[in-house]
Image (tube, rainbow, N blue to C red):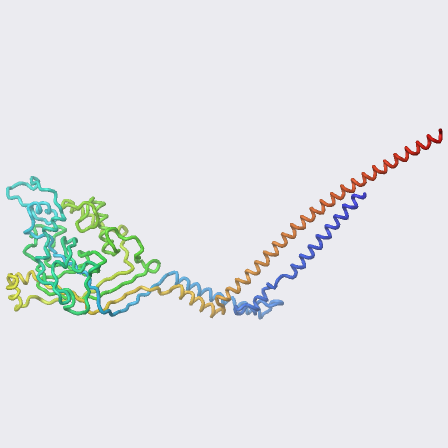
Length: 525
């Protein structure tokens, strides 16, 4: 009975303490920090919400303000979405400008005689090997069949170099900005027309002009040597019916692609080419489709260009199909022989008619090109024909049929810049969204920070309350366990004390009985 009373007293004590703690927690919950929505709405700089979230019941005034705020918010979100869609479309504009300069770098000028082989320079072996290329029948004075003839394997680069028109023989006069020039100022380059020549092709030693207009550029007189043109026995893919030269004006950063990008100059005329330099700047993805300079370069070229890309594509296709390359193609593969010419023509024809996926050449992001205006006058005049005939020891008819003058110059010392620019960038997007946000809901970046700060404080308060509740529950559980342990210990102590008391009482009672027995015995004696 005594132990049960002690245990009930401890249990009541623990319950009373838990009730007092619960009462304290409820008191704190009833008085949280000032995070009410009405207080925030009254202090926030967002327009309109201080009229919506007010203390008291919701009335008509608050409802109308809420509708006005929601309509304004919807209009803002609609306009902001339109701005975002416009930005994601990545539009661009093209800016055209013209800038003057005291001097300009003269472009590279590549010239090719339309006739690739001089007839007088061809040997019997050359004619035999080039039969598929030129259409000429092989020389066979002894009546042997062509299959009976045995010639060493042809070296196409040697044939082009040896039988092509030599600039030393074609060039009759050369002048650049009032100074004489010669064939040594040209470099040999191979194209689809065979052996060609480029003036001012080296970027490190390029020539500059300090004045525009006729006579301040390159002026050359050429003899195209029509007497050396191959006679036409039959037409082939390489047969040319024209007489004259092909010219391409290009930058030093790109190789000549003269068979497609060149223009023709006829004998018997002086051709004036007025140039206008154009510097183009394109945008990379996602605003445009240009190829940036940071991307991988094309093997064999220092700078990426469309011409280099096309030549590389043609080279890879010819190597894949015919296991060789043409003389003008880059690389170190074996050069195709005339017996492979049909295979090469077929491969290049298939490449041209393909959809473009096999040879996709992107425009470089920075490009220099030259706009051209051509005009011509007939040469020689009747008075100059006799003079030129005596000077070069040629007939007047030969002068008219073979001589031409090419005059390349800048129209003026200025250049055009054609630049693609972003029509809508991040700054424009933020400005438009900020303007719409201020117009419809009267907000700014700081207003958004206020809302985020309020949300943060509310979440923080709720998390703190949740964590505090969990800690107090855990503490109460520990206290209950401690109280139960204390009650058990005290109960055991009481049992021990009672046992000791009972034992002591028994001992006392035993001693008393013994004393009585001893007293009784003494009385009997």
